[in-house]
Image 1 (tube, rainbow, N blue to C red):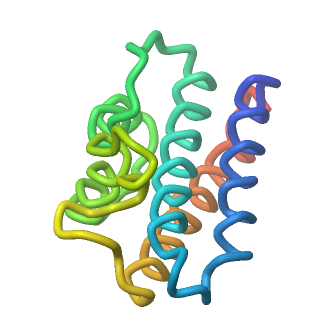
Image 2: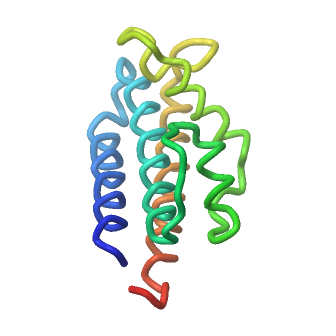
Length: 134
């Protein structure tokens, strides 16, 4: 694994660790959602770096997923990815961070986002560990 790839994966894991600290706090569900989006974005960017692809600077999970898809089959639920995409791309002010189009995620939704982001991160980590360039 390339050093830049490892740096992106470690940064994504930091977001996962942050979510774990807030997972049962109903007033921070929007922050959990924000970190879930960030963990996935950073994971995708790690995979893009590992493949030495040039990518436009974007935060869109859907666009990043499309770049990663030919090399790594990580996302089975594009609707979930789209939902998390809206968490970041729609936010422009602090009181909007981590909000879904219909408002603050429920505690159950934030836990689903957490699990989804961890699943993608773990799959990516496994893929990177078996890459011949490791």
